[in-house]
Image 1 (cartoon, rainbow, N blue to C red):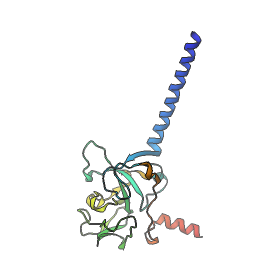
Image 2 (image 1 turned 90 degrees about the vertical axis):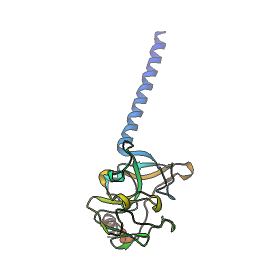
Image 3 (image 1 turned 180 degrees about the vertical axis):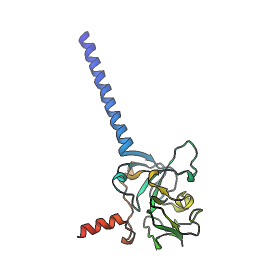
Image 4 (image 1 turned 60 degrees about the vertical axis):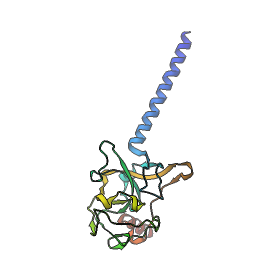
Length: 209
């Protein structure tokens, strides 16, 4: 009987140890490497739908800088007037990078005076100005990013409440895992060479040379 009790006790302790190790690994991954997020609302349609689930990579921006076209998750800035106590995060696309200029005109974004061609935006989703960029050219600071939803008529974004900083960014959305028929790696949008960041230009130059 004593041997049976010791055997059961040993199995129970092994189970507890396995659970503790599993939870510890989960917490490390959750806090430092990746985090699940649910898309809520219409602001990223048609590329992301409400109730889609994505994994957010929290490590990439510790090794490199955010890039134009990245889909990111970030803490809603105070200017966005997120309901108090909800701790809401937003998912948007980076449109402009630090120290660039942004203007909204003719239903499009202009970056440093050049039209930003966005193949991922349907022609019906016209980009209209809002309170922050209404009729003026915005110059971003050295740590500011201009973000926008893909569903321009139904997105509260930098057009309304201004740019965000790197401190507000949780990470880059890199994988959609729900719904099952939409499972895919999330890739950054591609733009003409004139819209490449300085980091990308340096990399391309190094590869050529």
